[in-house]
Amino acid sequence: MIEHPQARYIIDTLTKGGFIAYYAGGWVRDLLLQHESDDIDIATNAPPETIQALFPYTVPIGIAFGIILVIIDHHQYEVATFRQDIEYKDGRRPSRIEFATAIEDAKRRDFTINGMFYDPIQNQILDYVGGQEDLKKKIIRAIGNPHQRIKEDRLRMIRAIRLVCRFNFTIERETEEAIRFHAKEIFPSVAIERIYQEFTKGHDFHKLPQMLLQLHAYGLLETIFPTLENISLATIEERLKPTKRYPVEAPVIAFLLPLFPQFTLQNQLDLCKKLKLSTSDQQFVSYFYYLRHLGKADKWSWAHAYANPLCDLCLQILGVDHSQQRGELHDAIERIRNKNPVVKSSDLMNAGVLPGKKMGELLKEAEKISINENINDPQAIIGRLDTFSK
Image 1 (tube, rainbow, N blue to C red):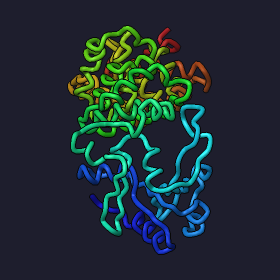
Image 2 (cartoon, one colour):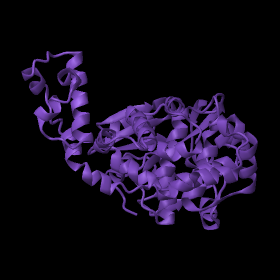
Image 3 (cartoon, helix red, strand yellow):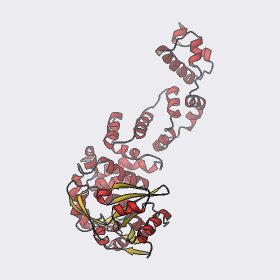
Image 4 (cartoon, rainbow, N blue to C red):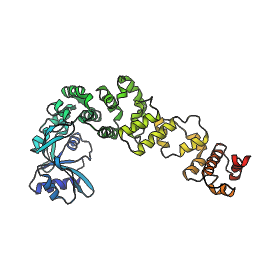
């Protein structure tokens, strides 16, 4: 495990200031599992105001919860004051906090394997919740009462499934029962963006299909996507089979679409809006749908499809070899990409066509003739256009 010098500088600065400072959470877990991790969070008994005073570049991203973002050499690290959370009301965040000891801070966290600290100065693991033992047993166990941990933040149910799939662990019995009990309670306390972030993290470790299957097995997937209610686990598994061949570059939404084989393009775009996806994701969905349904279209349609920057990725996802047809359309594809058609607006103007809607229609007709009939002589094409052929 490589320790970031910037993170170590934060630890050393806090220690020299007379405070305790440890690495916390997932980085400690990954250290013990000998997995590389860039997810370095720091926990300390220094108050937020002191953290801000000790470092020149900080952002108070959650000062009410004792969380300060410290920026060192363009690297960002969350530095949080040890705390205990008091009275959760919305299933997402506490109504208030109290600054506390490292032990109390550990006991407010989600799972035992995420509740450990590491003191890099003493080279010592501080484990107040039995995380090391559960790592050895390959168990995901909630810290304390699992029902209480889940009610504090219902996203923890999805996070547990993600960790199970990432590390090939199992969920401890009481924690498993609590997840099944609360599976229908994700909304409204959890924002859909946070759920999609969990999907993205699962995708980053190439475990998203397994994660979706496990979520369905626990009754969570149908809560997120109600149209999947009463769909058997075997059916979900069958729908996800094609994703085994998907390239790693495929976006998260590509792995979700097979869950809904009956969806029209509008349904898919509505799904994107529900998940609050980016414009680029929506463009992917639209193009992928278009490519899948292009079928026996003319050469012009295929040339434009091949010219799209998303084409290679989408063909890999579809598992289709179009190399022969693409080769035959190579010149046309390059002309489309370079916006260099055989018949240009200047050619039509020379033939007496004025700029406007009609010219646009004729340029499109000319390009279709050029590609579909493999004609590269502008005058020959112009002579075939409706305006000039009568």
